Amino acid sequence: MTLNVTQHPGDALVARKVISYRAVGPKGRGRVAVKVELRNTGTVPWTPTGAALVGSKREALTGLTVWPLEPIPPGRFQSITVEMNAAEIEARGTYTLKLWGEQGGATSVTLDGATFP
Image 1 (tube, one colour):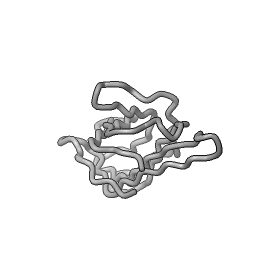
Image 2 (cartoon, rainbow, N blue to C red):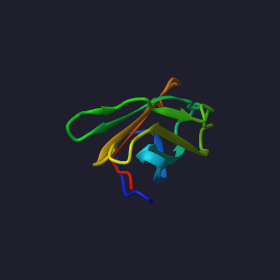
Image 3 (spheres, helix red, strand yellow):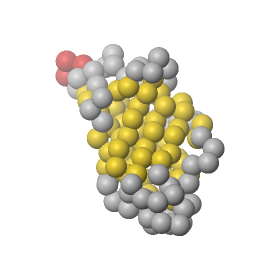
Image 4 (cartoon, one colour):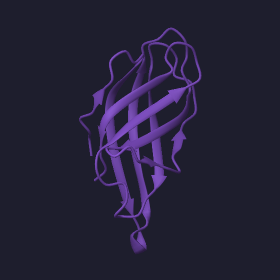
């Protein structure tokens, strides 16, 4: 599902396209994921090192995996995926997605409005 998210001002990374997924297997277990196409508008490469998905009641989803952990060169686009295990009834509602990295000026990006189908 393509998402219409709101990005926080001042981020040196710009989200161009955001898509969420839910896969449910037998017994209701599965995974959810958010794929974000980011452009590094900074002057140094940026590598993701972590992520958080926080709900409207400030509850954070745990067990997130971020990939690929490869640098995004200045001026370039790259897709980053954040995923986690979730039962069919879990990960409902609207979340804020925050991605952070370790390099220079472009340290994080925050997107409001992430939902899962």
